[in-house]
Image (cartoon, rainbow, N blue to C red):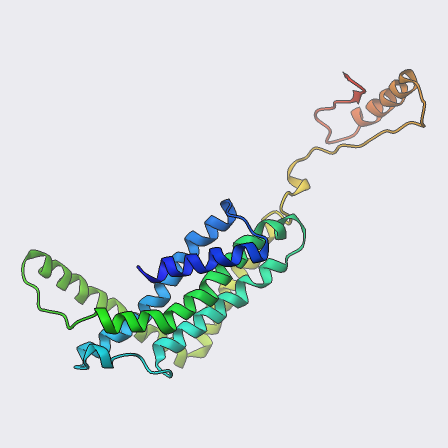
Length: 246
């Protein structure tokens, strides 16, 4: 809970330096990034809880620098940065729309979120967390059953992952199948941000020489109408001459 506002304040402090403003795109990026920050800090908190359950006292259970939870946070930050930072350099209108979104996530998650996971979360965990006491009652039974079911699902996922790692061919085939599916799906999607092929509204212009009269322009438009009216595939035809519509 404390890591999220700290990350948000740090991100807002960087906004003026980058020339960004608080708008729909940056707020949407913040909403997604908050979940990623919490997830990264939770990994560290769970590691501290694990050390406490093994008998360590809370002040002594700070994860060491080479702990797997901290390396997981570092890898997570690098992966997010490698995905979202290149998006900020996309050209065109799509790049301008995605720039604030991508930089917000990369800035909040890859920098401030990682710093919180490496420094603030371990320190607060050592100060606030205590060994769990055995709870009783109806809720305790419910959460106990849920925990057992969750542990079975976790062990099943880990065993499946270990099996796929040992059988690399199956994993490569599955990855290739997803890649083929993406390629087939990509061919049926629009190829641009505002695809002209989906509008089906060609807008040709028929300019006449400077100082030409409206009668001369009208004559040209009538010739164009005659040609387009005989063209296969033209369903609706509309021409415009100055303020008049034919």
